[in-house]
Image 1 (cartoon, rainbow, N blue to C red):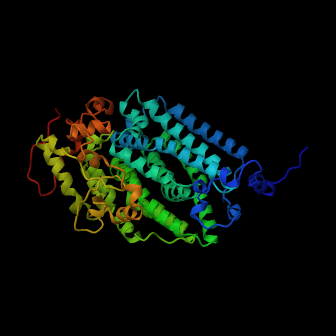
Image 2 (cartoon, rainbow, N blue to C red; image 1 turned 60 degrees about the vertical axis):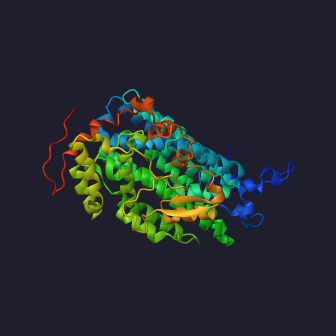
Image 3 (cartoon, one colour; image 1 turned 45 degrees about the horizontal axis):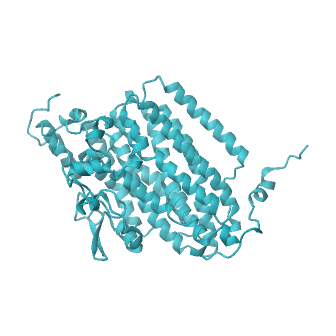
Length: 514
């Protein structure tokens, strides 16, 4: 019988397999341009000190994942006849549709990132951990595709969970652009951006926030599923901290600082387009536990600062700008208004803003009514007067040449909200913010060749050169309207908020139900 040896007595030996290779040159097996060792000044053998905080054996991993899957699928099976989520309101369904259209196939892309680390990470213990990370991401993909698949027979919009990532829709382009940027790097650079900024900084917290909102709304299946995913994210996200510890030990943090600064901002922009409106506008008002701004302060700002302070890194240089945007919830409000006005470009039907919404938003973001209310007033007035076409954009919006997200600006005179520009090789590029411009200027050749949807349109690459032609190019043309479950020219779902009038408004007749 084998002796009962404690795991801590053998774990490090079992995962330390940095053997000297006799059949191939070390640099052939682990090319420096793939591992990243040519970009950092770490001496030979330096990476062998790499050590994760939460250690796990293969047996423990499989047993734990089996238990979690059993729990999730049991809840899912039990809820199949419940009528959820359709009974929870259109706003919550928009949260689900936007999440499922945006996230599952990004998780699939993360499989390739973790597989890259599992093959080319410069230390065996890191490669061991990344194998579990790759399996995690595959599990997350399958889980988040299974749930919407079961809803398709009731609502065709859920089919966009499998399609949006493969279209040229602006939301899909922005998500792919970010993740391709992070992945198109060596293992060290990629892991700093994916596991430290993206996962530790945002996805971990994204799932916490939505799990909480889902539980409050009563969507038990979604809450259980993404809570299960969050526990995986928390484990494999630790790779980034372990990398920084090695770099800090050898005083080699300059490149890491730049990558973290860049990727943290890019993650913030993407999540503010996805999670911000979901928390502040789409979740039923009675079930909103926290605003996007409050959530960011408590879970992202505090947690990220704690992570930064535990390393040799510094806060990103744009931190004060970031905090100002967080506290005013600015990007969330920009995006919610943009989603509504440019709703033909999305696979969801964004709701309007009711009187209860406005009261809640004013409470959470003092001054919201003065700054944003009149924009929704114009939509409500147009609907009361049966001018539905005035609530829908008839043109394309300026897209940031870095993050690829709409450059929506309420106050052009405010430094944080004005459009920025930069000349490169005789071409003028436009940016939604100073940090986006800074990222571009640091690596112009990396980003200049990519054409946003707007640049393709202006260059004549999209034909016909009309809004309808652009929608066809994005995969949102006429033939897809029925699949999206909404005709945006006659949005009956908007009538429920059009009766609201600002205090100073003259009485007007409400829009009819037809």
